[in-house]
Image (tube, rainbow, N blue to C red; front, side, top):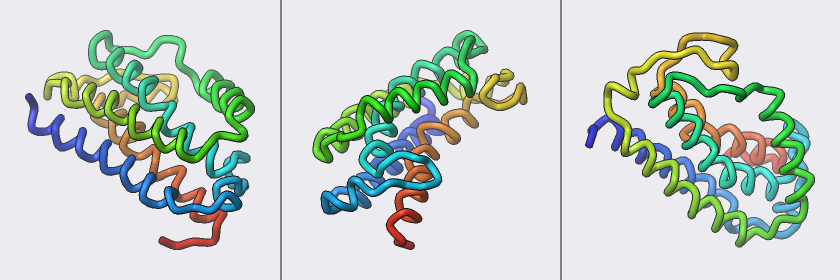
Length: 162
């Protein structure tokens, strides 16, 4: 096992744990608060992070193994986000948190399985405007940064600087 992959996997897990710790004590009103920057509620954003982990794992695995993520564009991501927000508008807090806990394991396991050679693989992706990025960048930008990105929106919506 790569020591670098293990360190990245732990960062994936830490992001999920920080998101859960920040939201698990929220009241029903806080849980349903709309995050204006995202046009989604706190609950939908938490569910979204949990639901994204397996997709992120598939996409990163494709880049690490095949050198590409064919068909994954920002239009596809935006469409998925809209559909998910509509479908999970009234998401239960316990269910969303359980989804994060369950699915972060998928992403962390995938990251732990990456070799240093795979982490260093460079490829262009439509999600990054054709820029040549490494697999490690994708791990850091997606399963690691993703919960923090949405946590910032949640905190801003609730007026919290935690």
